[in-house]
Image (cartoon, rainbow, N blue to C red; front, top):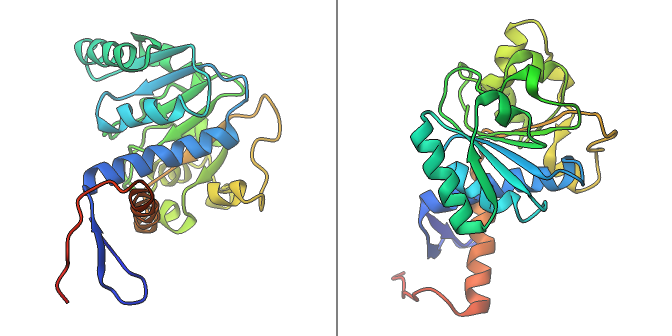
Length: 239
C-alpha cells in the first residue's frame, strides 16, 4: 500500500497492504462493538479461523473484558487450533463450539467466506451484538434474513453496504428487510449524530463490506505514529 501526500501526490510511506486491510477491518468492528455492544458483554463467538478472525479477537478484547471465546470453524481441527492460539496469545479461555453455541455469545464476529448463513438466528439472544464482515458480495451472506429483520443494522458506509452487502440485499429479496431500515453508519454513532443501542434487549448488527478510504485513514494514522516513534525504514523517493 502506497500512502501519498494529499496535496502533492508524492509517496509518503509504503506498507503491507494485507496487514493494513486486516487491521482496519477488525478495528472497524471493534469500534462498532465499543459503541453498540452491551457494556456487560463478556463472551465472544467467532465464526472462521483465518486472518480476520485473529484480528477480531485481538481488537475486540481491547474494547470489552472478555471471559471466553467460542470458535466455530469449517472443521473441528481448525477450530481447536484457533482456540489454542487464542489462549496462548491472549490468555483468554477459548474452545471449539458448534454454530449454535457460538451464536449464543454476547458479541459475534462472522469472518468467513461462506456463501450461506453461518450465524443461527434462533440462538442469538436478546442484547447481542453481531459484527458481520466476511460476506462482501450481493449474493453471499453470513447472517440469516430473520436475524437481520429483528436487529438494528449499522453499516460502515451506506453506499458500499447498499450495493454489495449480501447479508442485507438477500434479506430484502426474502421480503423481511428494507434498506431504508438501516439505522445508520457506525461513524455517525461515534460522532453522536445518530443513536446507537437504545435498550438492553436490542440486537445490533454492524455490517462491513470495506471501503478504500478506511485504508487511507488507517495508513495515515500508522504513518503519523511511525514518525512519532521513529520506527520503520526511511527511504528517499526520487522526484
